[in-house]
Image 1: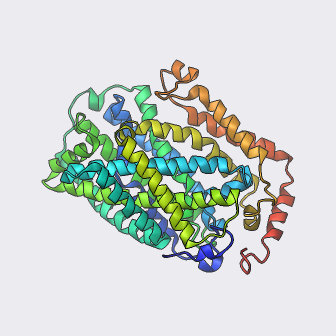
Image 2 (image 1 turned 135 degrees about the horizontal axis):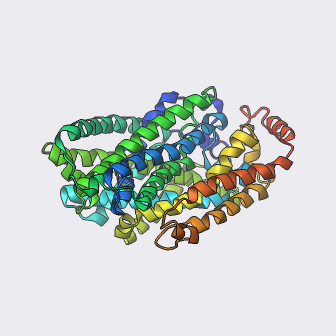
Image 3 (image 1 turned 90 degrees about the vertical axis):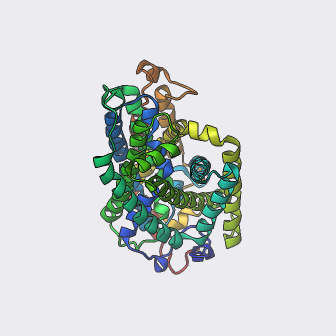
Length: 471
């Protein structure tokens, strides 16, 4: 297995400076290809499925991706500074045990996304080759876990090649679409503005981009500490934004051209309209991207699960435990995708909405703590100390999360529940715009009572000699 040296340390996920490697531009292909696959295509269909009009949905995709990517890329800059994966960094805000709240949310996202990815892969392979879908799900899941087992460097290399493949495929599709494909001159394309599908598409795109925040620094933490905030932000943001917008718009266009077909068939038909055989190639390329992002999800789920166990009962990390955690996550996603595959595809928009509600308070608290409250000064040692300076429960972070979440409830808009304000707005969901300022503002306000100079000095002293004895 590659890159298992970090497991020799007591701290499960800390990457010492001596083991830092790679170049900051490598973040671009990781997050471009992380976006360039079928699940992203599906996100671009959310507004069209609600009766939106193509040109307005294009604008919603661009604005939504810009909003979500902005927050996601700022999380990426935390990796080189701390050498820690994203969710471990939640302990200073929520406490050693309190962070289990957000880790549970992260596991929901990992397992939910991978179950959906496996269902999408099965549908696509069935469209291409007429295969049995349940068997395809299992083969796809096992292949994704194999890439995750290979480790960080293999994932980076694989993502790079997928990025090149998808850039070529999307370039051909885009140029040819301009000259070959013709949208119907109807309200489906040029209709008037409609608030509900526009906001649904905007926040679906924003949530999709924001959901990478739970592990975006897992793939930047191997970079040297000398990498600047500006460099890691822009290489991450440009890869994720370009890949997200480009791929979502593929789904939006396919849905506008072939509204009666399911997603895989619509993409295939759009490609075949350009030239024979290109539809199959486009699906296969998107499927390759889906496999690599599923492996990233398994990798992140493994780290999160091990951290959850370590928070309850301290364990000595080993390759065998990492493999066991991957197998556990594999079984969970397979059960969910095999039992609920069709429902998962039909209700992907609902899943994104739930993630939006769960992640919005966390991302607000995590970012303001890093950039405003503590200004990047943390003790890596104390993050792994259950009785350390960050405590077992941090009432500030937990209170800000709960209050921010509760503040969003009247703005929820899903099939399961529609809040009174969302109902008054005609079903429009603007919960994210409420949760971000409420959670961030309340957390900063409560932290005013902290002696931040003493906090930073204590963090500095705790980490003296860290690189010589990371335990």
